[in-house]
Amino acid sequence: MVSVVEPVEGPASTASLRGVGGVAKIRIICSLWLSLKGANMKSRFIVAAVVLLVVISGGLAFAMAASTGSGQAGKEAIKDPVQPNTDIRLNSLGYLPAAQKKATIITKCSNFTVKEASKGKAVYSGKVTGPFSQKDVNQIAWIADFSKLNKPGKYYLEVPGLGRSIDFEIGDKVYDFAFYTSMRAFYLWRCGTEVNAIFNGHRFYHAACHTDDAWQNYLSDLNSQYLNSIAPNSLDSTSCDPNAKGSNSRRDATAGWHDAGDYNKYVVNANVTLGLMFLAWEQFGDKLKNIKLDIPDTAPGYPDYLKELKWETDWLLKMQYPDGSGKVAHKISTLRFGGFILPEKETEKRYFVGWSSGATADFVALMAMSARCFKPYDANYAQTCLEAAANSYEFLSKNRDNKMPDMQAFRTGPYATLDNDDRMWAAVELWETTGEPNYLRAFERASMAYEDKIEFYWDWGNVKNLAMFTYLFSKREGKRDDLVEDVRRDLVRTADSIVVERNKDIYGRCLGEEYRWGSNGTVAREVLTLQLANRASPNPAYIETALDAISHLFGRNYYGRSYVTGLGYKPPMNPHDRRSGGDRVRDPWPGYIVGGGHSATGWQDIEKDARTNEICINWQGALVYALAGFTSGAPQ
Image 1 (cartoon, rainbow, N blue to C red):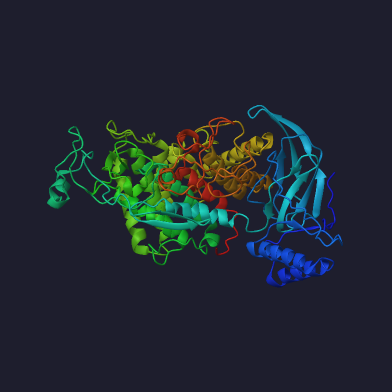
Image 2 (tube, rainbow, N blue to C red):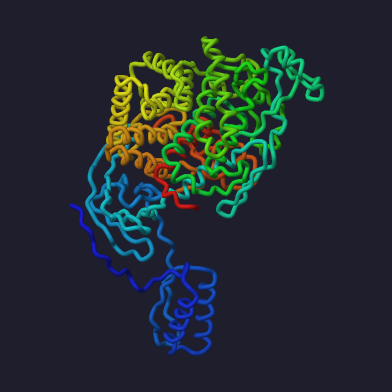
């Protein structure tokens, strides 16, 4: 049974002076002066001076005892701040007023109370449910549900015999700063320019980097007409590898984002990242367009959100071969991963790596999306994107084999993928942008190869879901009714299975016991499936599960910690990130989600652990999408 408790005044003997106004401070000092009237003048001056110092220094908690009448002030009961018990695990960002609100408690208990953080007033109480056991974490847990508490404010949860939780907030804007910070993290990932930001009093800065991107030594299939047109001053007589059969020349490939904890740039991963972020714009753009990200005005007239995405598409356009063939280079990379230094100190040559069919197909899809999202702000740039997409699509239609480049000289991320799903995505995005029926027919033919239209667990290596989502929610005419229903049914089925996994997990984790590389990114990515399922077949459980995914990432998990640097309770301090390892700032660069463990208890907050503690743009794009749907849209 759960009951609402009327506010009860807490102990009057203690007060916090943090944030107390000037008039109130004067009143406190005067009251203390009068209360010490039995003491001699010297004692009164000494005590008043000490209290004044405390007030000015800002907010030490103190207890003011009554005068003993013996010529001395009574003893002050100085108390340390109450430490939260981390056996009480909840969303450290907070909760939306109308949303479900749950905490997981891993110590036996029966009752809980929610109290105001500022005064300790009890505002809600209830009984926990449980116990529930879970093998992968080897824990028994009880669940506190305080969903009926919807008054905005800051609170903590208290459990008799156990203690209190961390403070949390209820309000319409609880996700706004996290969205701002995680989105602004892409600006901090910018390559080819300096970046500069202040966060929690720390400056995060690097100078312009990788301004020589990139060299064409490994592009062995450039046509002769282009090779003959290369200006002599762009040539380098020194080849890094005698087996490299390309041109010893440089071509501009600056801009874009660094991919992850390393500084290379990969087309396949960039495209799935942007795919999620453009979907966020298409679904939540009315809210996102007013949010200021405090980034340089590199695309005048664009909303800040799209302005940041354009920094990446500017680079992607440069990855298309300059010979007009339509091929798209697979990546920009050094031959080996560099050290933990700031990016401007990484001076090794970076090279174009030859074209792949997967990268080319993903490029088509992204340029088609770019064309329709950017058109209201820059019609000429949108047309450039669309023409680039059409050119590469035509090339792919004449070259049907799955193609990967020769990367034997490189020891950096391969991002190898089969291209069937990528080609399907390319076709449907071009159709959505242009309405041309040949693209629609190509998508529908390709979709017949898949019995299951929607995948439960997906990432950069399988973009089938992105293709199916665009087809299902397109408002264009000409779609096959049976295929639309097939996709819709599979979307709902997949969302239902995500809800089932969340309901079985003591922390509300929507992947259940599924753990792979970058699982935290996949937790965030499931929010896309849930949001779209809710559009196709509204169900409150889909939104509740989406919010539980965010709760899991920000503290309601096995560790009782946030997985996002700089945000939430006890966030990661040692991500696998060369900037964080290479600067002299103790705090890591803020706003980045780390990949998470390959098992339920396998995460380590250790810099060298790339398997579980790296950052990466595809996980970050999923986090941005997840938060975008729940931000208030109020200007920051």
